[in-house]
Amino acid sequence: MRRVVPVLVLSLAGLAPGCKLLEDFFKTAFQQPSFTFKDVALTDISLGGLTLDTVWQLDNPNSVGLSLAAVDYALFIDSKQVLAGAPAQGLQIPAKGSTDLHFPAGIKFLDLAGVVETFLTKDNASWRAEGSLGLQTPVGIIKLPLAKEGTFEVPKVPQVAFGNPRVSNVTLQGATIEFPLTVTNRNTYALPIGGVTGTVSLAGAPLGTLSTGNLGAMDGKGTRQVALPLSVNFFSAGLAVARAVQGNNAQVSFNAQVQSGATALPLKVDQLVNLVR
Image (cartoon, rainbow, N blue to C red):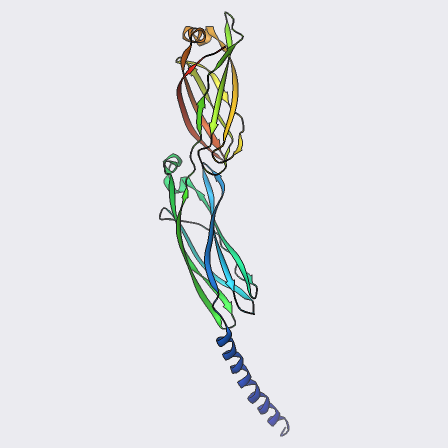
């Protein structure tokens, strides 16, 4: 027993100064990581909503890796807080490396404005992110603040315009009228258009239903042109339509809906067109 005690005393005496020296070394050598805003990305865009993802860059200048210990993040759209995701705690940040951190938020316009069409009347909407990160480091947990605000372009309903309808197969009973439609994406980014469908009237008389079918993802500021034929019966459509077919011009009305994602919004077009053969 007498031989053991001195050994333990010497060991503890030697270890305590070592720990203090190591702690002092880390405090002196440890450099503060930097955390900066990098970008904001819009994805999953439709007329019903989108995903807004703020991207931040975390730089670790130290020779030891760090890990994410806590996340406090809040996102506001037009001053209204929305739910947002965050990186999982425990995420490793490599030594002398950098990591991009994503905070995606799925936004439904109906939740922001009660009526989707009301929100879509805006040209832009504001967003604001605030909060902090907690990093596990050799010198304990440190907090890095985050704060950024900006605006994003609100999706717009596409523009729909008629070309001059072409009349063919004219008989005493009826005719075929081909309606050219041009659909224009007014946004700077791609927008999915599941279709434009509605009832068409010529010279005040209802003729039937026109549907573009699925137009897919339309490029920003892109256009799609489709020609939609419709068989018209003069007896059911009325004398006004028969006269319009024989004349030069007539008023076309299109009461339709635009499908984008899971959302369908009303669209109305009234236009004077020239009928050609």
